[in-house]
Image 1 (spheres, rainbow, N blue to C red):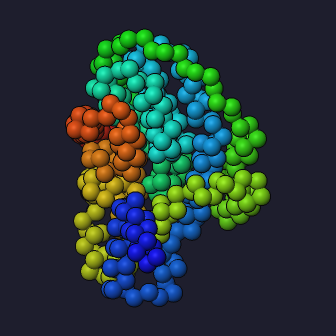
Image 2 (tube, helix red, strand yellow):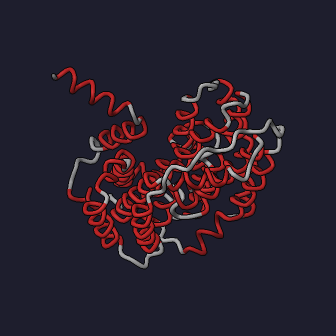
Length: 373
């Protein structure tokens, strides 16, 4: 019995290394700053509550069949592999702005593998790499597109106009580059027409559209986060309880652990001074580099405690999602899904993904520095 419990515990922590590492770092920081009532002030309850609500809503959209419905209707417009590739890349780019990058990839990568099953391993790897990059870059345009945007938007109390003016130029250039990249491959042979639609659960979809509107009002600071949290939780408990287990509670735990880590580091005078000096005038570059190792969500939380330049940090952590496979959690999700395909070639995919991402990183970093700061 004990052995079985230990095995389950190990599996739980191995399933999400970012969560496990963040928890260990938070515990380590407690050796230098023992737990005290001040810890309660470390947590950003607005971010945690809003993130929880958004994850509930997005899980509801997925279970209602909305994403499959969208993709199947779009596929009726295409008959060749390159056209399908373009449509999937566009879907990932634009849907990520509202439904988050990881959710779009979770929905569209498996569909891509099914639709392109008759294509070559090279084309499949190329399209999935483009989809992953498109979701990461498209998600930067809105405060709810990815977790780091939601956090930084709330942490720095950004105005919507200031937020969009910072990221829109980079997002526009990214779109043009990705659009062009699709046409580097040949047209490909005709594909089979998509099958019948799975039924759309309209009642569930209607509920989650209403809850999504509450989330948007909270992000725009029209509705207090405590009100929206209670309304969403009450609605789900009464009307759609099975959504609650679908929430990524490890992501919430990762945020909480990094809040504690950053709070404790900020309480150590020497560390606070060193990190603040390191960040001064280098926010964009430092956040890009740190994201390559820690991924961009933890980088945003860690570095935000040591700079007031939220604009540069916003750009750095979004562009920093390019580069290595671990720079964005969404990229890891996409890679795991790709490996489930019968024509998966891990070495081929990693080579294509890394080359594409490094090239974009080298283009967008100096562009953002010159145009957006």
